[in-house]
Image 1 (cartoon, one colour):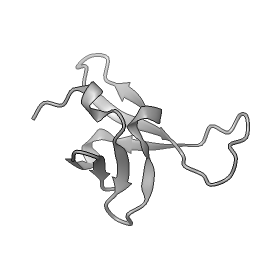
Image 2 (cartoon, rainbow, N blue to C red):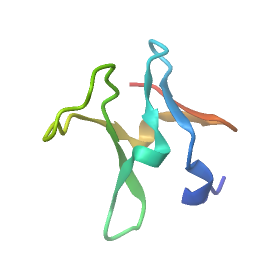
Image 3 (cartoon, one colour):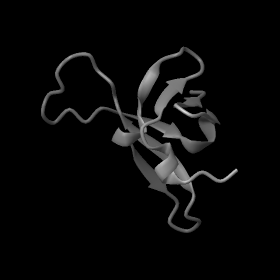
Length: 79
């Protein structure tokens, strides 16, 4: 299956193990293997319910191999 990065935009990332919402692809950075061009990791800013303070760089790193399903509205990961 081929997925274009543009097709991932706006999808919410959900953890299969506990149902936690981890973030949205629009806010996500990716780490790519320079030699192969394959995506290694999604770097998602941590979702918090309080006001984000300046300099707060908390992130969740989601290895690409943990993705279980890419649906129309969300991406299911198992971490």
